Length: 169
Image 1 (cartoon, one colour):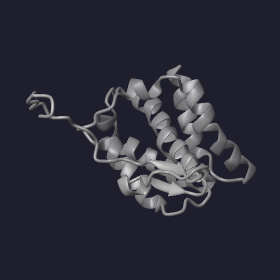
Image 2 (tube, rainbow, N blue to C red):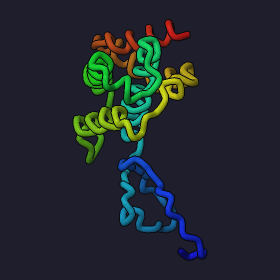
Image 3 (tube, rainbow, N blue to C red):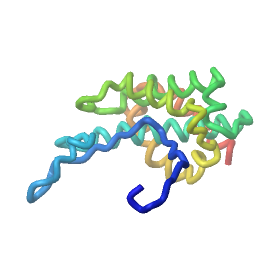
Image 4 (tube, rainbow, N blue to C red):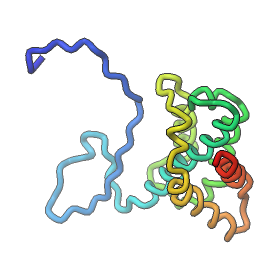
């Protein structure tokens, strides 16, 4: 009420937040960690984790979901076929491509992603996730694909994601 206005409209948001900053400042810095920001020596493992697990999984599920007739992400994730696909995509084809991420339990991180994707209160749109696929796939799916091929590891779920994208197009 600092402005003389009573605003009774609720602001709804997700209960998840993750801010990671590289602790490389030249003249001191605010105490960002006091407001929940994770300060790290090297941000690359966190960025790679986010791009490959969150963004890559978003892309992977979007095309398959759209082709199966889903338009809302939470509805798609309620389908056991899609939920299983997303988890196996993460576990079998993506996790091995990540460097250790200090302070992060990857299993818990993946569990949280699945929970967020399935949350009907968020109800993201499949079509939004599918937009700009050529850019997203190049950044989030191709690098793990290359890693897995170079290391003779599974690409089964990546291949399904890419097949879904191709068919969607």
